Picture (spheres, helix red, strand yellow):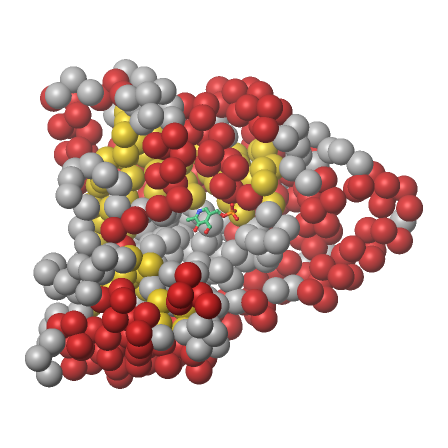
Length: 406
Ligand SMILES: Cc1ncc(COP(=O)(O)O)c(C=O)c1O
């Protein structure tokens, strides 16, 4: 990796960053200057805030959520006291794991899942078990079968959390179909008869859909507000440098999470929260997201057609997802071809001048073994020209590994 990173000619289809040129410099510059032009508002912003987060921002987040879900203003008012601003959604996710998981507890995750999530699970000494997905996202029959197996083995009592990324998931780009959403929430409630099983909805890529309106969130189907933990972030739709995220959590989790957050940092950066509150309120955030999705739609189309062109001759052996939003494409190669750092493909790609993330990292350890024949690719960072060149180099490396004699 180090050698690769030192080579400026390399095309990285690996880093899950947002497009550098898309970052909202003018919007943020205007918001900073507005914020500081009023000395008393400026001083408030430069002071510590509260652990739960700025109250105007939290009201603004719920207003934005209502817009996104096509609900009238005020519809989700009751959720404001359950809304906690965090340092990115990563902090919320970490705090949820810290609050809920004891050693030996079980978390069910999609197969594959966001590999960073597996870190806090492991840190807590908990087990992550994979549940298969298909082109419509998490498979409910498989989820039910997994829960049944755990019940039969006397382990259902250890299941505390189910983690899902319903929009344009990292790493697959796949979304949970609208028709699976309400049934998923109902299924989790049904299996919570012994102890509460929470459903952690990581909506990091919500808002980054290229076309059709997004289906309702899982959270919107939890009207009692006791099952779904909604994790959201502005890192993908606005700026990861601001690192502002938030969670809407069930009543019983508010105090434990605030207690732990108090120990971490007693409140996320107040200045960034006030800034975000402004850009949400004056509409510049929403305009930015519209521009951003247009840009990613174009980059995704360029990348997919470049893959088609460069990998077309291998179509019987190599498959990949066609995302309708987000930043990721997930590729599957024949089982015998190890895509890991120690396999033949990765070093070949480095020699060709292209990088990807080996898919094995995105699989929870159970059931063993983890599949090793996938690649995570992203079209977020590279330019259009680099995407075309990256696809060409990947095609060359794959073709050399699949047909070594040629
Ligand atoms: C699925 C998913 N969840 C959460 C995050 C965390 O982002 P942040 O902490 O910047 O909000 C990421 C970042 O890549 C992600 O891909």
